Image 1 (tube, rainbow, N blue to C red):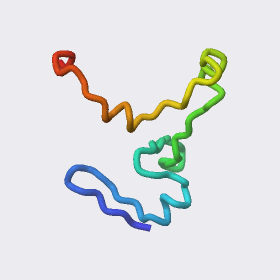
Image 2: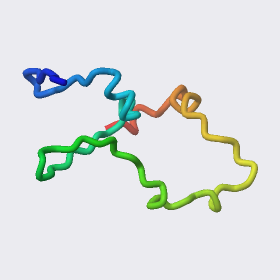
Image 3: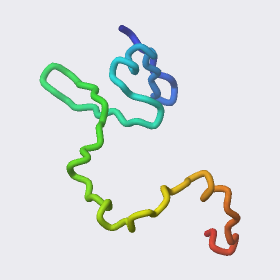
Length: 80
């Protein structure tokens, strides 16, 4: 399979390749050098390395609504 490199050094992969890799917009790919060339893999989050906050959340706390948070007015003096 051949892909084209743009003048900005960007590459577009065919959708079937990205689907097979299980990646979506915003995901990261890891490029590793090996003896045979380069290997491209999806970069996954290792959840075992993340600390859990489950025991720090008060029972009954409603889930965080990001849309509601974004729609709230903000104090323009706090912007830099």
